[in-house]
Image (cartoon, rainbow, N blue to C red):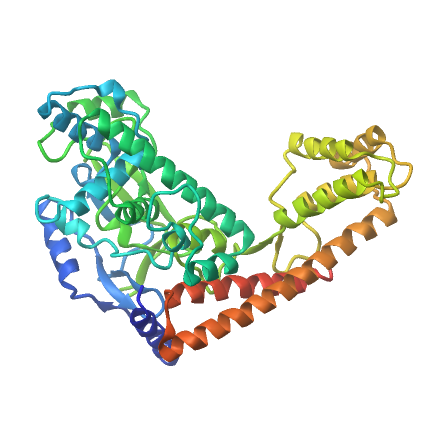
Length: 490
């Protein structure tokens, strides 16, 4: 999103504050008009939805008439769903034309196949029946951290060479940076695997890394999940469906698809919908479980995720997100490393060894209690997972503690047979949490100052990053700061 687009969104937000009952403004964008006509020509049933501009979400799907609870919002015919099985058939047909048919050499995952298809469609605009749909896809993903940090050449590691890249990497929460790092590794692996497979079919491999990054993010941000066809009736219906040269029926192996129109529905945490594949009409259906009035924006839910996940996966954050939390996994792991280092240098009074600490971590893993150490806003006490980990390790660190006895006592506590915890251990845990949260609060305050300075510079015309990305980072660090301050007194 460009700086101008972001400023337009903020202006609409301010207008919305003055006029809270304002409704969406139907879009007359030529790409949308063309998509609507194309969908009608392809046989998509009419719906009560149209694309519109809104003060808070910028662009989304608006109800043109009242939509009642338990009413279908939209249907997409099977032939308009692009799936991996269709990509496979298309590639095999091209390989046959080249004199090569090696179906056993097809080793692309669903995600990889759809990314390749998207990349290929972008490279042959004007020559495909899908042109109209491809023209409605985002031109870039400048608010998605991976898009900023993926570099200009294929690589398995993030690019932090330019000032903009360095700034983004330094201002991502640690958990988000780890997620983006994993995304980059998957992105590079998908690129490599796709090139290897297509070479075997004597088909030109992707050569434009930035276009491939774009295609990868199209699939990652806009795919719908179909579920899997497992019943005999469904499979027989699939096999009896006639095929065509352009569109092919869904395979029973398909669980995801790119779907025109559906990817224009925005996320809302309160949205309640049901989805299913109508095997009789061969259509994918979204049904709303709540009522929408005419002019209101209709939503779906991407799932109960915090803003860090939303930013990494979709490139946005919500001002009001009930799923936001302060993740302390990194802090706990750093603390465990410090404990082991102190034991190795014999600076600790405890009688356990550093290898005993590894054994304690293994116990937590065996009980499914290692990781996901999160604090939530408004919590009156420490979450159970964090309590369990802290109690076990701090109890083992007491002078004279035996590792087997500590584990046995902790397991009784974990089963509810022994609910008491020594005041010394309980105080040590609370002090650690308070100290850690104070550090997080101080760190997040400094980053918020940096972000504010960045926004001020961008407002003066020196922008080099998507202002919406900076805005989202501010939302995330504001929430982290709030939860950290609240949690210092738990």
